Image 1: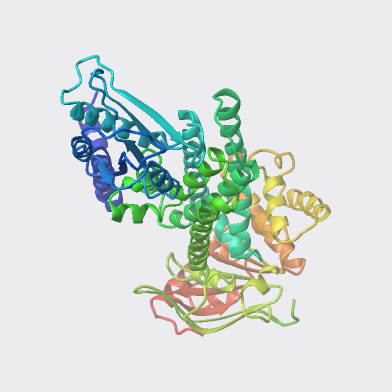
Image 2: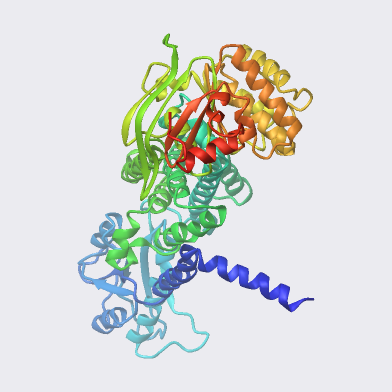
Amino acid sequence: MSRARIGALAARIVRGFRRDPRTLALIVVVPLVVMALIGYLISDDREPLRVAVASGESNETCGAIVSDADAFRAAMAAQPGIEVVEVTTCDEGIAKIESGELEGVVEYPVIEPKNPIATTRVIVAGTDPRVEEPIVRAATIALAAARGSPLEPGEVANVAVDRVDVPGGERPSTISYSAPALITVFAFLFTFMLTSVAFLRERSSGTLERLLASPITRAEILSGYLLGFLGFASIQALLVLAYSTLVLHARIEGALWLVLLVIAVLVIGCVNLGITLSFFARNELQVIQFIPLVLLPQIFLGGLFWPTATLWPPLQWLSRLFPVTHAVSALREVMIAGGGLADVARDLAALAAFALAMVGLGVLVLRGQRA
Amino acid sequence: MVATDLAVRSSGLARSFGDVDALDGFDLDVRTGEILGLVGPNGAGKTTFIRVVAGLLAPDEGEIEVLGRKPGRVTAADIGYMTQAAALYEDLSLRENLGFFGRVYGLSRAQIVDRTAELVSLVHLEGEEDRPVRQLSGGQHQLANLTCAMVHGPTLLLLDEPTVGIDPVLRRSLWERFASLRDAGITILVTTHVMEEATRCDRVAFVNAGAVLTVGTPDEVSAPGDGSIEDAFLAFRDGREEPS
């Protein structure tokens, strides 16, 4: 082993990085961005879940008896991540869950003097398992507080969970809930990564120059790339769908063609994003560096793990700009809730706007290659 | 193609990239059916001029006419462009590359089959046409590159340093191909910084610092010096001779 040779090799690598300020910047920027996102998301700083505590006497649907209402309400309000909203009846609360104004309703507990264990009921929408757990946890703790004594170790508070039939009825399995996110991330990652590397090669090998000197138009180049990758992305999506449904028993309540339409519109945007970003990379290494920067914020903020409604409002606004947010939302609507075209029209419109913007950018960068 | 005695007519071309003037008052006419060699050092403006002729770059100033028209998509079908890099899809075979570029130029399947057989035979790559291009040698790459530039039967061939990295035997063979293409009526504009190759052209243009120093037959441009094109070029470049 020659220390001089090893040292020379190491020095060459360091010198290479020093001459490549973008790589150096990304080495610093990417972990900071990702850590900031994770730090924010696993902290309790997110926007609280909006939960109504339904008052008793006028509450015919829930039929609860008000006991120590104020103590329960105060205990609920004191739970981190929970904001208590006033409604008069459970029905009003359910209507607000359906309209998306609330994440859940918690009944005032029934506390019977002879029964030391209080009972209550939590009502949440059927399609989002992520909001149920924190609301049930908050209700359990509040129940113990309203009873006047904390839960003993091993004691089970009686919290019944009702799931409102909005929009999907029966609670989906974790795989049903995850399948739309997996399909979206696979389609996005696969299309973006392969298009950008393929286009970078097209540019560096000189074949793009040869193509641009031919009668082919920019629109034809973009369309050809799109068609090629759309086929692969659709096959991939069908494979993930088939495996999720046949092997893992995920649900697909809605129409398959609608699932494919959402993926197709997403892929149009991703192909053009890949083409655009490939022009800012000199080699494959630089393309790979774009992946965490482009994909990770979308994974963290796109509603895959945490409902976007619980994000800090500026981040909610940012998440609405991400194609992944809209693709996941639309696919969940179709696959879990059985939504139709009208139900996903807004998400589809957002995806189409993203695709259009990316096509425009793709044409612009291609135009820069000629003339 | 529009009938004209000049395949390329250009005057006063200027094109800069940032602070660098790649073309600076570039005047050159290329006659139909000749091999015109652009000779000059690296960075002289040869490739920039070729790219302007191919319609890939618009000049900042000056006039350019290719095959009687402004270069661009309308002239693209009549031009074959052999880039400096191999510009081939390495995972595809030569036949598949020819098929792809043929379709880009609007050839029918039957035309592609005919052209493939014709071109493979022209460059003596019979038996190699179905191997992935990445398995071909450096010289075979250049030959394959040439066939892809010619698949659509262009009347004007732009060859940007076509013999770089090629051994002397293959180089000579390539130049013989160029001569036979010229004899078949194809105009060839070729760049080189190998002075020996310039003697094989019908006419030579000495290019330096974005401008044409002189144009003439190899004998004409080398006459003022002691007979060698290299000395003649250096003489022109150093300003010891006035450009004609």
